[in-house]
Structure formats: structure tokens, C-alpha cells
Length: 279
Image 1 (cartoon, helix red, strand yellow):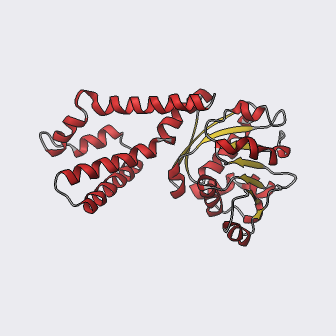
Image 2 (cartoon, rainbow, N blue to C red):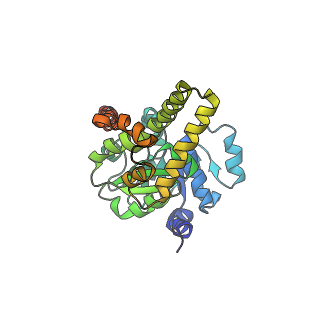
Image 3 (cartoon, helix red, strand yellow):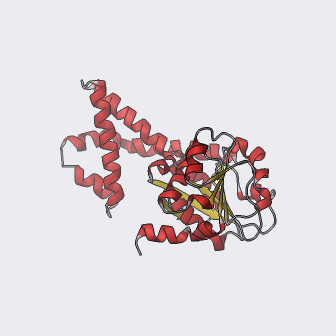
């Protein structure tokens, strides 16, 4: 079975039982687009978001329902509101909680215990941490379920898999590190593009050309890494000729573990902040 066919098959429970999306901002909207692309019928979806605006008409045209009052039952509820809106928004879908309805949260920083304290006992809950490349179908989402949610983790994987790869965590404590690496990671890469372009300008390139070269290089290298079975170290070595230009540049970037140390401190700072936000 092809990957698209597997994804479509994985979404069959929500196609039959219905899906409620709480929050349809950038991430929720990206996931919704992924579900539609995977074949989920619009009639299976109910979007709860007071700020839909003009998008409500487009969703309604696809058969989706939009409104602040969700249906009486659903196979899955995806909580995609910003963490600061969670306390206000969650009560709207809390009546759907129960042993037969999966609750999947992508609200950063909110632990499973937050939902367990506010939803019916025995509700299967999966905490998920996607990242912004989900908007182009290249995200990666880390998942961790509470005890009742473990049986429904494949459904959560199908929901998250509509916008990229998925990984299962061994413990919820790993979520802070995931947040620091893949959740915040795209910003680190975007800053690397800025830095690479600025270095090109310093060497005499026009600003627009330097940025074009930097963007294309980083996205191309990322695509090469994505499609290759080789480890990143082997890909790096394949570009590096002895005593060549790349070796000269890497002698600075890798000298005394410069980049490794900087990235370690960067991820540690983000992980520490994630732990603070999670209480």
C-alpha cells in the first residue's frame, strides 16, 4: 500500500465518526489542508474557531461545518489553539471527552495532566509537537500518549502524518527537548540563511543575490539530506575536498567545536524555557 493510501486508510475512523478542530490558525489550518489532501471529506469536519473570518465560507464550500457549538460526538478532537487561549477554548469541546474520542493537542507547553484534569476520566489523549514546515507538508510531529491514548496513537499518527513525518516519544519529559530541536529548529535554520547571506554580502555579493544563493543552498541541502540514506556526516564529507574551499570554511565552523557548542547552548536555552512554560 502506498503512503497516500496508508494515510487515507488511517483517517477512516474520523471520516466515519467525525473530527472537531478547535482552532484553525496557521498550524491547525495546515493540518486541515493536509487532511483534505489525504481525502478526508469536508462533511466529516467541524471547525470551532471564532476568528475564522473569510475562511469560513471557503470551508463551508468544501462541506465542512463551522460554528462555536461542536457536534454531540466525534471520533477525534484536535486542539490547535494557542496555549494562552487554551483555558478559554477547551470547555467548548470538553463535553465530547470520553473513552471513545481521541483528544490530540498541539498546544505547546500544555502537559497531558492539564487535559486529564479537565476532561472525562479515561479519555485517550495524545500530546503532539509539530513544526512550521507542516505548512508545506514537510513537518515532523512528535507524539506521546497517556495510558488510554496508547491504543489510539495510530489514529494520531495518521492525523499528524497528513503534514509530514511522525515520531513516538518514550516519555513526555522528552517533549521539551523536541520543542527545542524540531519545534524551534526552523527558526535556527532561517537565521542561518540570514547569516549565510550576510557573509556573502561581506565578501562583495549584492544583497539580493546573496540571499537567493543562501536560501537555495539551505533548502537544496535539506532536500538532499531528506532523500539520502547517508548520515549527515557522510554528506558533509562528500562535499569536502582535502585542502579545498569547503575544508577551509569548515575549519572555522567546526574549529574547537564552535558550532556544536553554540547549537548545544541554543537548544538547552529553548528546552529550559519549554520546561518553564509547562510549569
